[in-house]
Amino acid sequence: MRIFGVIAFLLLISPAAAADGNTGSWHAGIARLTVNDDMPFDILVWYPTQADEVPWQAGPFTMPASRDAPFPQGTFPIVLLSHGGGLGGGTPLLLRELAASLARQGFVVVAPFHGRSGLRARVGQIKNALSTALANPRIGSHLDPTRVGMLGYSLGTTVTLELAGAIPNADHLVTYCAAHPEDAMSCAHAPDGQNGSAARPNISSGTAHLSPGPALKAIALLDPFAVLFQRPELVSVTIPVLIFRPDRSELPAEANASALAESLPNTPEFHVIAGGHFVFTDVCPVSPRATSPDVCSDPPGVDRQTIHQAVNGQLAAFFRAHL
Image (cartoon, rainbow, N blue to C red; front, side):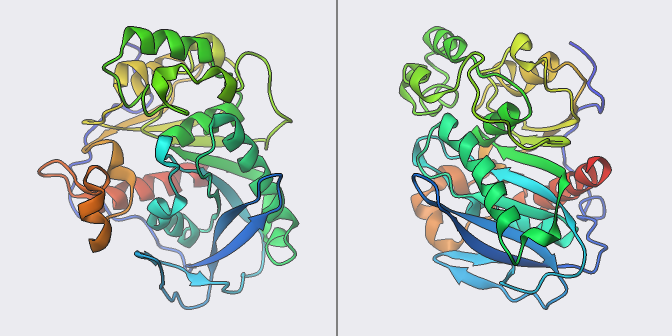
């Protein structure tokens, strides 16, 4: 196995090491915009502000950012965010603390609500979300389109890799799932499910790509769903890559995170953390815990909040270094 740029380790760390490094003077602001596409969808934009941070409720979720707070002077680097979701659709609200943390570090985070769309549609949504944010009269002048990175979680990592130049191989997914019917997370929960059999019409496979996307300078991947990509499909992904892999994830490492790290043309930064696939999502409010135990529960000994503090700090440092 190739040696990674940073040796994998478990984030079983002291509180001092877990500090997220928020030494700046920013608070988190948030705005919600609508993208007028063929099928309109909303996006959330988290951004730095000097206004006091006033949390508010969105259903069961506490939003750790002030609504429509004023922007400070200047322009800021952009981090596009593609959430996971699989068959359930997902929502960026499950990553709200992460997005707010990046805003406090001086980044603007642009995240669409993907809904129940497949991979092909999600790639287009990211492009249209960025275009909408840049064109917004209140927000666009504060964004630096020359400094764009992207962060993906689960299925969102597949979106991120494609926008970074990777070419999804739907045929490989079908072949893999036929040989590994036990891998439910990679197959039954993959784009549009059905053990990969529905992949071809919903994944832009081969050389067929949509219009060019943003010129990404760096990407970060949280428990990547990467079975769609083999070494030949990754040759164009030459920008810096940061990968986090939970040690008890239901996504098999040998078909996803580890295989991806071995196949990228340049050695990525690779970390193994404690927890399962959903350890990256925010600590659940009381009401969803009973209805979503898989998302809300962690293995014994896993402190999700402490892990988030460490991961958030490393993400901010990574993007600060490369954007």
